[in-house]
Length: 477
Image 1 (cartoon, rainbow, N blue to C red):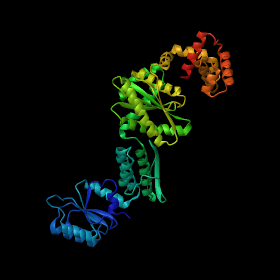
Image 2 (image 1 turned 90 degrees about the vertical axis):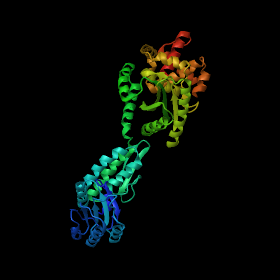
Image 3 (image 1 turned 90 degrees about the horizontal axis):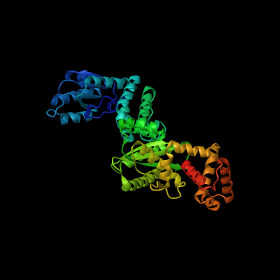
């Protein structure tokens, strides 16, 4: 059973205003365009009569009585003006006679088609509702509550922002903060297909970012490329960044956020949701520009501004990092999240350099022993090593020196190199290296001896010792 209330909640009826009377008292069966008021008494039961000529005063009272006696569903007036409003007597008659009085100054042909479609139901009505959803939902994408309201208008059904209950159909999509659900009462046949299609479109719209988020995602993808490709290719990508609004020529400070001891799907889901959430938070904190990218299982956020941020910029960035970790931990209880912060550098290569420094800061923090946020030491050895190790010649020299160890594979090589670095950092003391690494001193001695045999270096020779120490630190960095 379709009523006027159902019709008014559907597509193509936005210009219709209810003036008086109930809209759900009589089942809607037909629609007629009428030019003469004296024919209204002959309207079929359940009919919605659209009157194209002006009617006012006692003549309108008579028309309402005639329609009520015929059992009509309603009367649509097209000539109401401030000078000729519907009188109180006609309103009272409409309420008593259970016939609706409506007004429209819109397209009458569209109204007639909408009524006919609603009465007939079936595939045509379902298609019209899906078409209306496709037109309306993109404009409210990213706002789940507005999406639910729009879907409710299109379907003429209550749409809830929750998982379905018994007797309901539901659809979901993965959004920035997890799964977004929409649910509505299920319907049979074509009406049910419309419910399913509109909710599926609505879930995608609710879970998506706003329409202007597409360039943001494109900038994020390009940022990920800039940080991952070789240096020469990154410079070529700079022009694409400028075209997309990525401020590649600005001064940059990079944050690197990593979940410790989290892998696989859980790590992916956390980082996928953290990016949009982090951007919303950081962009609300100040006038600088923030962008985000997922790089090698971490979230990299870049803070960009036209001038050198100096020490104040670093302090502000560290404060922003602290606020960010608080919010991310609230959304991910139990997750051990750490953040590294790079120093400020300019241009495409400066962007990459700050991101490398943020990663180094995390590695040097040893998994968080010095707190959840680690800042790059701009005046220390790590910065000089990064400058040196960024050249192709330096990387080739390090790999050549450590090649026999690296040939063992990452899982076997990394513990050996970390042990050797600790041993050399502590002036050749197996005991102090063992304390740092939580190993027995005999294990340290054994590993150091093994690396020395593999690379053929004399660790008693000062020059060879320094070369091996710098190579271990740079490679592990």
